[in-house]
Amino acid sequence: MKEQGRKTIAQNRKARHDYTILDTYEAGVALLGTEVKSLRLGRASLVDSYATIDDGEVWLRGLHIPEYSHGSWTNHQPRRNRKLLLHREEIEGLIGKTREGGLTLVPLALYFREGKVKLELALARGKRSYDKRQDLAKRDADREISRAYGRAAKGRVRELR
Image (cartoon, rainbow, N blue to C red; front, top):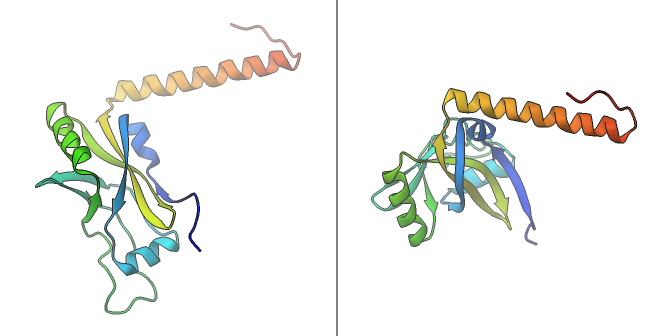
């Protein structure tokens, strides 16, 4: 019986804070057996991972999948480079976009979809510190507005500034 839906293994929350996400892609990941078993236990870390394009292939670097506890001499290396599986047209489009405008490939999430390991890969542009401050200020302002509307809806009208 195959699993249905999406089961998240790991997320890169800091990526959305450090980068402006322009586009996302779903890629398969070429893995070894012990890596899949370790992922089924929910053990992985996307911190400090990134993707590169070398010789027309997309590689994921820095993904940490700990060794499988019941693995023997066949166990994998925790931080080896892993090939990402994308369509040729997607790879060619990514090559053009990463070369032209200082864009980078950042992994956002690692998950199981219908029993297969998938990676959500983002084409992103790095944020500067003032961009991050503007985003935080906007989020705080939106939160304050929604609280004020909530109070008004409950009848506890307070002066809106």
